[in-house]
Image (cartoon, rainbow, N blue to C red; front, side, top):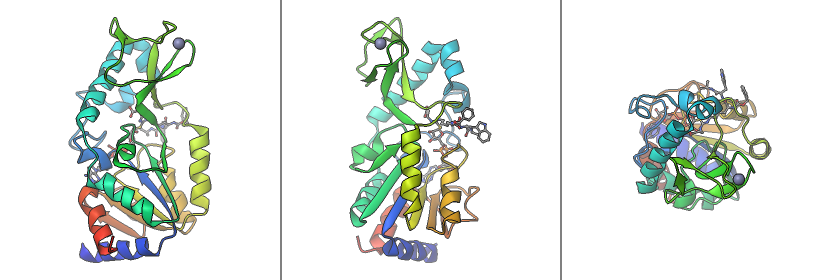
Length: 245
Ligand code: BV8
Ligand code: ZN
């Protein structure tokens, strides 16, 4: 394992323009359950069943109950050493972009600056009537179990559900950054969800140096330059130590 750490630290030291992609795994050590890991899921539903416009149409109260439950978990959580290591890493490079699939805002709370939230934020909502976007914390206004907009319209979480398009501007900015990057660091993602799952393949095709840190092997473990099996909260700080940061 040390040899892989040394290799990864060597690649990171040599990087100038670094693209980081994170998934639910980087928040696991903050106590936030992942979607597909063995520490399992959200009660007995699967994200693919709940995080869809159809589920919300069918039973908005159940979907809100799930999001409010997740919000309460996240509100009690703190960024972990993995999040904080990425803050240090961001300050080390001239060009750095952190694209996260997570909706928990933990990267921003840790102090990361150049963060793009590909799947939105659980702490924002928007109105189905007037389209207004609102901050939607756990101190939310809830009438008959459903959060309502000033206009009376029903609010929905401002996240990208399965079957919904991801924000075109964020996707475009990510690909533009990737085109000039020289290293991609993939942390805590099973690489199942598209189009985020395309990022590592694009990076490899473009000849970027690529590093994966994940608890389990994934579909990209065989194509990246260095694949480290481990917890991001432990491996990332170790890599910083080897980099002398
Ligand atoms: C779209 C927001 C165009 C909501 C989320 C068939 C094939 C390919 C694609 C599709 C297909 N059928 C449908 C699709 C498209 C679909 C998709 O990808 N489906 C998957 C399930 C096959 N994608 C979409 O619909 C996307 N839109 O494609 O638009 C379109 C339009 C119409 C019709 C078709 C296409 C929109 C996807 C966005 C969905 N929204 N979240 C919310 O959060 O409530 S996705 C959800 O999954 C989260 O954002 C999460 O982050 C994300 C990805 O999962 P991961 O982050 O990777 O998390 P996971 O639990 O899977 O893995 C965690 C990993 O960490 C594990 O490997 C574990 O081992 C590791 N780990 C655990 N602990 C640690 C650790 N690693 C390190 N350290 C640790 N401590
Ligand atoms: Zn409204």
